Image (cartoon, rainbow, N blue to C red; front, side):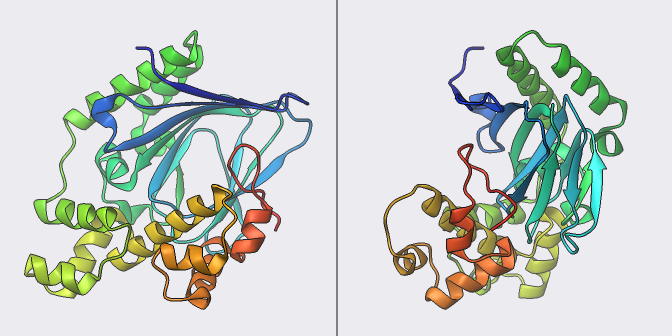
Length: 285
């Protein structure tokens, strides 16, 4: 089906190309975007990937991709096609010349349904696609590689996700309500009020949410607030950092800086300095 595309190219050197598309309308609450990409550089490139409200699934058409461990950036794993769970720390991702493929950005809720396993098994981890899906994952990757055009690939992904979601075990009503409340408030809601509204103990809420989503609800709320701040900074408006901090729900500048250090490993100013033309962040501050 025709769909809006955003195409970004490195016009001067031709080193990279990105093609963004929206998923089918029925998938919008569960899937954020599809991104096709090619890199034609002569050298490898490292990026800083930040914890987010979405979970990527990478179908790789080119050279292997290296991903650092969340707990130890000096240790790396190498993947073809892979997916991850939710993260509460940044990782470094390295791609070589000739890299390319498709990235499917699920919301964490969408990933929970699509992957069909509790996400606490994947917290702060990347795993090979065939370890999760077996032969089905390999067949999907092959079909996407052989499709004649990007629209055909995106249509193929739509159908694959719809089929799998049709048989997914839904979250409990309580967990879906908790997810919705945290997302609706951009993370600016107390966990105490959520547990009180549910009539649950705080401990029960935290344990159930962490099992399904992979992060405790308070950490997930912090990640959402951090994402909001990062997107505000990426928009490039000339605003004081203290104003951005307050607008995004931080108590003060010190609170703002602490979360950036915890989630990105650098200060807000250092992170903005590494912003790339494709909207990602270079690894070096």
